[in-house]
Structure formats: C-alpha cells, structure tokens
Length: 424
RNA sequence: GGAGGGAUGGCCGAGAGGCUUAAGGCGGCGGUCUUGAAAACCGCUGAAGGUUCACGCCUUCCGUGGGUUCAAAUCCUACUCCCUCCGCCA
Image 1 (cartoon, rainbow, N blue to C red):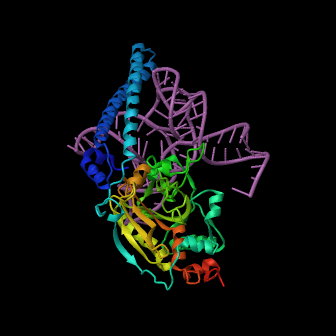
Image 2: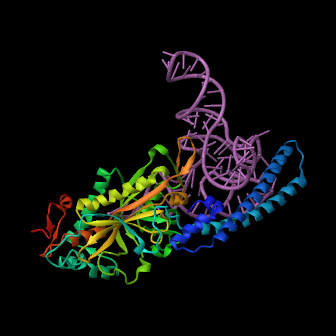
Image 3: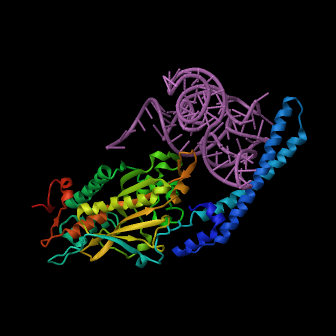
C-alpha cells in the first residue's frame, strides 16, 4: 500500500508513477471515496460525542434517583442515527481499501523508465562465459542421461512442472541448500529461520500477493490457507503488527523453503527442465531496515546473493529492472541472471528488491525512533538463491566432454568429498 | 477428536451493566535529594483514526466477529489462539 496521505495531497505523483509502470487506474474515484470517507468519519464521531455526553448525564442523574425518560428516548434515536451513519461509512471504507490494495508501489527515482524486460539495464557482469571444446547440452538432457533428474516419473506421480531428483541430483540440491544457508548465516550475518510453508490470507495480503494475484497461488481446500510462493511471505510477516526498536535494525533473516506457484500465465513457456516448476526450493534473504538506510541495505543484499555464484565460480550479470518490469510491491529490483551454456541464455536466478514501506504499511511493521515516535520501516528481500535454477547452472556450466558434472569445490564438503557426478 | 480453564496497556494483575477517563504493582523516562550512584519521594509513561498552522480537542480499541441494552471490558453467541487432562499419532 502506498501512503494514503500521498493520494490525498498529491494524486499527481501517484498518477505519474502508475503511468510509468503502464498501469491504468481510476484515481478520481479513489480521491472522491477518500473525501466521502473522511466526511462520514467526522459525522459519526460528532454523533458519538453527543451520545457519550448524554449517556454520562443519564448515569449521573440516575444516581440522584430521577428517571429521565425523554433523555433515554433521545439517546435511543441517536443510537439509530449512529448505526446508520456507521453502516454507510463501512461501505465507503471497504471500497476505498479495496482500491488502495491493488495500487502498485511507486518506483524509486533511480529505476529506468521502460515497458518490459528489453528496457532493463545491465549494471554489472561477473566472470566470463566459459568455453568448451564440445557442444554443451541443456541440463534436462544431461540430467536424464545421468539418471539424476526424472521428469517423466514426476509427471506420472503428480503432473507437469514437477521433478523427481535422484541420487546425486537429490544430493546436489540438498548440498546447495546447506551451502547457501551456511554462507549467509556464517559470513553475511543472517539469522536462520524455518517458517511455516502455508500462510493465512492476512499474511498474503501483508506482502502484496493478495488480493491481486490469487490465481497464482495454491489454496487449501476448506481452509483459507495458501501454500507459500516464496519464503518472503512468512518471513516478512514475522513482525506484522509489531513495533520494533530502532537499534535492532537492520534485522536479517535467511530461510530455506519450498515454493509453490501455479504459473498460470506461463502456459507453454519453459516447459522443459527445472526452469519453471510448480514446486521448487529456494533460500531467501529478508531484511527489516531503517528507512534512511534501506537502499544501502539493498546493495548489500544484492552482494550477499551474488556471493553465492562467485563462490561457485559461475558467470552472471545483474540487471536493474525498468518501471514496466518491476513487481507489484517493489520500489526497486535487481535481477541476477546466471549464464546457462547448455541453453545459451542468461536466466534469472535471484531477484533483490526494496519494498520501502509498501509491505510494512500493509502488514503494520513499525519501529520506534529515539524520540519516541513510531514510523513504518522498510522491508527488503532477495533470493539467495533459487535452488533448482542453481542446480541447472551447476550442471550446465560444469559439464564435461564425457557427459559428467564436475562438482564445484565449495560444494565438495557437502557432497561427501566427491569431485564429479557420478564419482569414479 | 473429547472434557475443563483462560485471553485486560511493554510486563504482571484488579474490574462482574452507568462514579472506568481501566485500580494497583513492575519496568521505562524525567525531576528532588547526592561529589556520583543506589534508596526514598514526586511526576510522566499504549495504539489507530479524524481535526488543527500549532498547543490541543474528539472518536475508536480490554483476543476476533456478530448480538442484547438508552448504556457492554462486564451479559449472550460464534470463531481464533493459549494452558491442563484424556484419546490418537510422526
């Protein structure tokens, strides 16, 4: 949610930023709802004030023994007026809130203006494309040849967009999870959390997945719970409806979770391999930051995520997403795109965003300043990294002429010391 | 799944239809005293919204939603969560 005061006092800024994102919105209706809302609040509060005073009088006069019948009648009438005024207010308020919940965040001034991913800006590149004296193959072929990824049987068990990992494939996945968790907790100062993998509607609304993107989520039958599409949801909501101490900030969490997405808008896209699955593993970084420092924290978060690929020694580049391509809740997002020689493309492996106060306002995550005043803090998160896509990157980058996979050095301690898949 | 008990401010805890504007305590902040500190004493100390240039004023909030009543923290009702016991279970 963006600041309601901004809507009231500077609707022009809101309109302009919606335009930059390419989003259409009836701002006139929003402004008039807000005006109506405030008018009704004043009206019903005035009536309530009258009611309270009269009620007090009755209580006092009753003490002296008199029964003021016409005062009670008056109060009765007031009560009716109040409830009808409040009913009207409820309707207006609901309409106003429904609208504010589907307005996307305002992009930060440093975000390039553009329509889609073609307007994103590559801001840095690390390493180089490796060269091979053979034709590198995509991970789905390699995985099936080595019998470490089984897509056919997963489709039999469940359906499309699921994978059965086997033997060293399963071990590689598990090793990457542990390697990333260890790196972020030991070297980058994050606290590990293991949250619930399903959350209620309130949490989903708090981080911005709801109400707008319900078609992307798996919802449980008979319960208003959803499978998480990212650890961002349960982890950011750790502090919903709480007031933190200023000196505690920044708070940094890392969480491993599986993620569940319907991929409703991606029919026929990325149907082969691990790229786009209904269930995938991810290690996620989440920060609760002081508003004055959140953009520094974003740069740090990006470096923490990048560090995973540096330690694995895999070439990547970083893109700054343009206004037309950033997510609904984000003010600024960097994507890390990893090089996949088997497919000859760069593929997003991490997305690092600053949400500023957008999520904090929805989820009521605040901090108390040294002067005692309370303010919304800023939330940030980024993949550190998506595990399936990292498996993809390791397989494709470290494949050998003989059809093996060399295990990156940092992973060897996690993989019982083996140096290649399969081992000798 | 069954049977009981509970949810009140940062924390503990009273309050059982209108003298609640929620007692009292702890903690925190400020002050008096002191070379300094402690102790003692005095004062202040929740959140959201509306309104105001501002001081302030007003409204709402006692787990959540409905209801009864002129009037609800207090009565009724449904739900949520926590505790105790029983059953089942990784």
